[in-house]
Length: 335
Image (tube, rainbow, N blue to C red; front, side, top):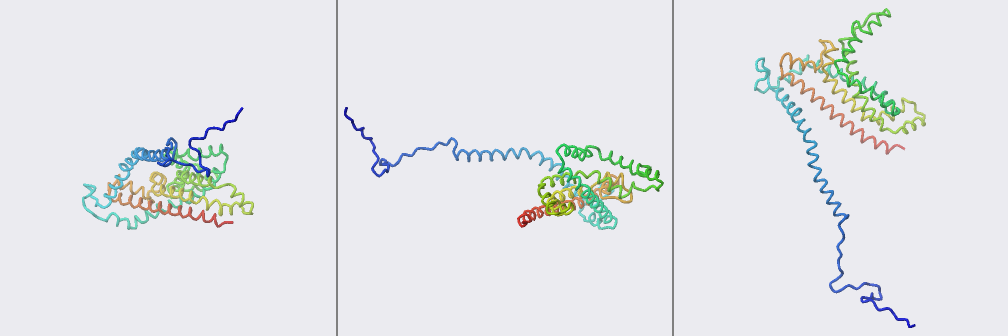
């Protein structure tokens, strides 16, 4: 049986191993585009292009709502504030700054000073009472946290007027507190229709606006930091001052801004629990709109209050951003 060598390949490779191509050069084979990068980029571009109209449709109704019910009325209030008052026509088609000059009178200066003072006292008391409650809610078990949040939010489901009437029953001349004092042989106290009663009512109403931002900020603080501070010999007050307070500062600023803004613009609580002689800005604006029909003066007061609130908001945002920039730097420099 004779062995035959196999037939040579029609295009044998040279000895060096290099592949020979025909004169026209190597043949190019197209790459499949099925799941390549080109298709992915095209899909991403198409997704971004289709997402823009969707966001426009979703935000359009709310933008129209703000335009019709916030921006246009606010612009109308600004226009009323620079026109003089007329008892017969309410507003005269003239330009004047008298409505803003009137705010520099002693009566209006005391009015705004009292309003800002009560708002500041309310905010401080809400912060002092809200920090322990927010810390307990942030570190509580899920079941207890749910119950605590329900008890914090539940007063918001009750009308403000109903809660104020409840405080009138408690703080009145023959209320629960004075009846208890008389039963103990003590003289009754004048608690209702005072600034103290107004602060009590405002704190009771606006406490959730302080607790919820503080709780959200404290929840983001790892409990291991507290354990480390305790292991290093810090007591609870030192641990709170050096760990909890700096890291929860954005929540404190947000809660303080919310409480202060709604406190200085409150109307129902000062009207029902405060003294007629010690008024706040909201009561004055209400009377000038619906009692004396002096819309230009009320517009100037409202615009001044809104501008002051906006200044507070921008200051709080600046302080929050500054606290956010300082926090990473302190973490980097700490051993």
